[in-house]
Length: 265
Image (cartoon, rainbow, N blue to C red; front, side, top):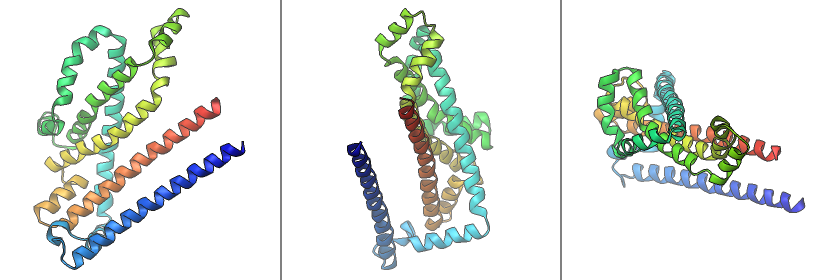
């Protein structure tokens, strides 16, 4: 018991040390960026510098305009992430369920996955519309095929002996799915969901570049058009923070799930 407590303390200490190093490194980057900008070592027209970005952020914060841009981008990303992940998972289950369908659609899915989805964004927006629905569909399209292929592969890789054992007890296919296939792949599906966070953000930003008049992608595009790199860098930093927060929320959910599994055991 003492050894287990010592091991947990060691892990906790290690995590704290890693966090301290990460924060220190991040602060060092911003300090050097500020110094290089102030002394014109870097071209501030191209890179701006932290204090200027902070002033721009504060000006957007005072008018609450930044919250409008963050809100619309978050809405588009969350909807694209949830719909893309759930729809991809459902299709993966259908392909696992029906071997004929999986063989028919496998080459099409591989080709779709190989295509640069961002290049299809203008076509999707023309088909669906230039409003929020078009941007959400771009976001869905980027994560959908990856979810289908990855989830289907996870399902196929489940130990065949375990499946045969359940079949020997006259388990139905739906029982195998919900008692073995999905439970044994929860960890993989959570990791896939983490990947989809980034993919969904890519879809939203690309969509906002093309048609939107609000959102983080719009801010970045607007800043580049009027040659105000401070706005561009502010948009990029806000995007980074939002992506990190979404990723950490999923990490917390994963941690709670693992604790529940350990407690059940």
